Image (cartoon, rainbow over all chains, first blue to last red):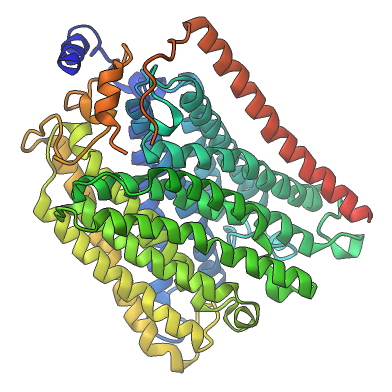
Length: 535
Length: 48
């Protein structure tokens, strides 16, 4: 059998790996770099999460309890930057590093040294960002959107934050270049683009989005830097500039960024649902076209974040309607996932539970997004907790749950051990109860008029804030279970078979478990590729 | 539905390395062009 031969071959000659610190510092192996990305993302997730707990502790009841308002604003700002650029994006890059070469039959990423470089930029970027807390003026407190003129009033931490954002952007761009050239050039002979698993497809589209929009963010923050230090007036009204222009540029980056965070989640869920439904994915090609349509539309909706700033009626209509249009390809996806499960032999292991939760809760986030797209309604909801509830429903039970689903799904393949299913399910149930207690009441708070980014509030908002904070602590602490499950599986446990999930298809499952350090050094033969392609 | 294409010839390693390098440089230039273009657009926006 081709895969057995490959396994023997791999174990005989190609399982040598460097040891000690050098293995990680000079890593060029896609699995090592993927692991480093995932560990880094996990650290940032807990750091950003602890900031969220500071926020929720402060908001547990009205009045100022624990932190002063300036520090509270720093917490909201840095929590967002850490979660977006430090946790979710690196987690996706980690999963891409681990899985894309395995899924397309490539021995590694196309540019392994660039891969190492793009990872090692990240720790320095976040060190700079966190260093800003210890300089006069304190950490960034302008919100992650960094709107001028507020952001220009920052203390000595300002250049540190700007440099950190530049570095995060550079890392993402280099990672994206690597993904594109890998997918376009390193696929095994016989693996056509429309044979690739959905995770590779959604990552390819994400990588193009990254190349297009991260430089726009870099341009925006470069202009902030020159406004602050070199006397330019890009965004300074007194000098003939326009602060609203920053908002346009920022959201031209910011809205596609949302899809950068969520498209790979679509890919992972499209892998997991067919596995545990024991049916091929319904409408593979429409999934690919829907992902591409979402990516395209994400470029023409940015000003829906700015309805209250003021714009012509034609502009409001255009951005409202284009935003609503995104519901069409997204609806196609949701329909396809439901159709895949329809009459399938469903089982509910932890990855499937997280995927189904993703399906329901991401859809709730999508619906509240549609509400926000309606201009007159947005005038009411803008800058309230309704917005906070909306994007957290998209990003937490959306992106974060999909990352966890992916880790549970591939963990046996990576470690060679089955994870503890009971603990995994406990983690899932605590997470889903916690996340809904945390974010659902924020819809009510927003509709009742509670503004976002404030450390104190009127007593009428007290009850739901208390519920939300209790949910935050349940969700936050239950994530320690996730670390425990992963740690346990890394250390040992029941040996995982080559294909731990009977419904799993794809090239990664044709490799031995755990995946050898060097895999697919000989491309898989077309018969093996055909076995993996079920759509 | 696309069938795996068994007739696709394997790419020569040197040719592949060349394509990878060329692709990476092209994408890097595209990213750099976006960076410069948005700054230039903003300059003209300020003047306008």
